[in-house]
Length: 408
Length: 85
Image (cartoon, rainbow over all chains, first blue to last red; front, side, top):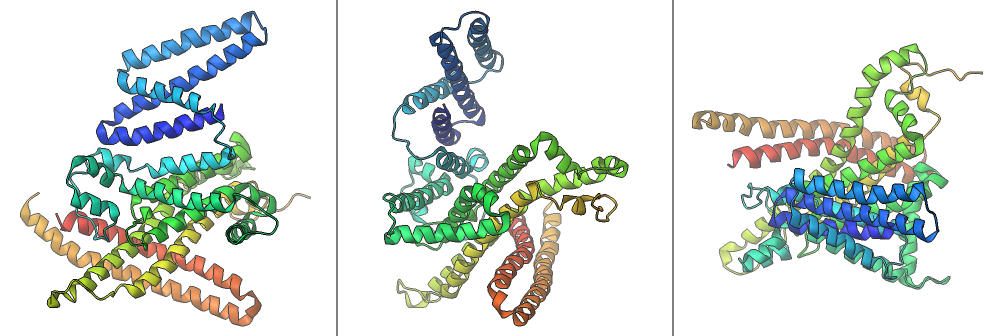
């Protein structure tokens, strides 16, 4: 069932991208509602059939039948008739869920679900220039100069509207391209794992070991291994996206706030989810209230510490994304300005050459790309570490400002 | 908006924005200098911990730098949003 959900969600995400450039936001909401309704339908159907096959008759089965036939169709009727959800979009969404159901029967998705879930999440995050694409990107506000990449070249040489579509989604296209290249390289290297490693396997092992040291150094051995997939993928993804801006013809997707904002939101959602899952819902609220243990804690906790903690949690993804965005956009703009200068400084000779004045800044950009990827990952690690249960909590959050004495 | 008011806004912002950015750069330079000084002294005291200290220094420097980047992004937003329209 999970496979069905994953495939359907990915397909719907992709369809939303197309739909947003061609129609409105409400059309895409209908797409999502159709897909989710289809998934619910499939789930109820499987439970129903399981009940029949196992020979259960009686009240529970009748309950399921009622739930499926009356409840689901009532929801569908409410959505389509009273909320006026677009029928076409809903039907397309429902078809996508059926396609997901059909595709899940194929055995080609052999990789473990974790890999696919992170890829889907990051892919959906990469398809995030939603607001910009749908609110009329035709009226472009003047923005900082940037080095052209192959999509702007295509858009420049063909003024047709079918290829303008590519230019609107150039961030997402580069992000998916980078995911494909990096994922493909890793998949190729890990195809035939042997005890005597080949060169690519040795390289991958070195990278994974380095990331393992980094993550387990902060989170500890067992916890670090649990969060290593997410944090390692985050580091490699951000690093490859940052460095892609230095490859001629490519552009860093992280040089736009949409991409880094999406990454920040991913980390925020994951950290909060980790907190709720590890601490429990009550423990999570306890953590937000500053662990009130005495009367002063219970009175002042909700008044002082709760707003501070909530604002702190909300500011974290904002600072992460702004830091990464500012650095990478600054590098790209710096490079673009110096490339322009270098091209212009030989303009008096009317020769089609220029001096590569931007060379020292390429080295600066390489260093800062790596550093910013490291900083993003380290901060995410620290946020996860702060969310996990640890003993030194009372010292940080006691309201009176003194460390709490351990009770003997 | 009245053209007069927009001209005045451009004059004031045209002076204020780069000045604010320079102020942020100065403050960040002071903070970075303190961080790097502390890191150098720690490395001199205990050379075998030099890699760990260097790693922590790079991390700390990136945080301090980020504050200047926030100011830079705001200045860019003002500049390309307000002053070039």
